View (cartoon, rainbow, N blue to C red):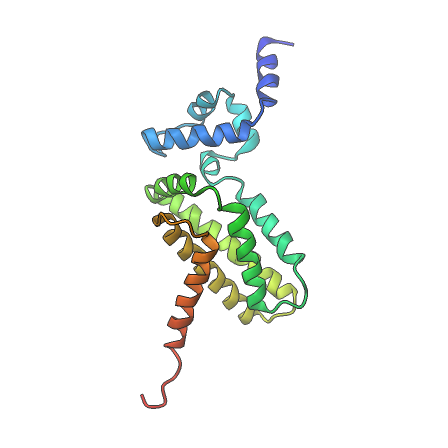
Length: 204
């Protein structure tokens, strides 16, 4: 075994490699910006190899967004395991509560840092929209599977995602101790008021 092969084998099994790479990427994005930062720089900061980086991430954007695909799969599995008796709205709430508790709570400071980086780059903003669309599609797909028509599934999914991402923005901007899910419920209440204002007025 050559020195290079040995080094690569050791780096492959370094503990917490993914977390170290994410931390290194975040530090470098903050220090010198997203665009100038390279994958070799991230790997070097983490004390790992470039090859190890690509074992965990497809590109440097994914080091910022985390394992979004796996998170989406977890949410979908959670929805599929929910009671069959849940209404469309109750299922969305079930998914939102799970998503906020398992993928956001306890990470507020870290998510604030990531959000600031995302806002600084148009490509990252586009990737964030893709992530939003993936959550919406996950909700809609499960509602359709449960027999809801396409319009009902789409509207409920859109409402859920709008409430979630509106809540995330407000939650990151506040310093109180309320959970993200509390902000989601607050956003849904605001949406309810907005939608009710669109009711036809016989006197108009």
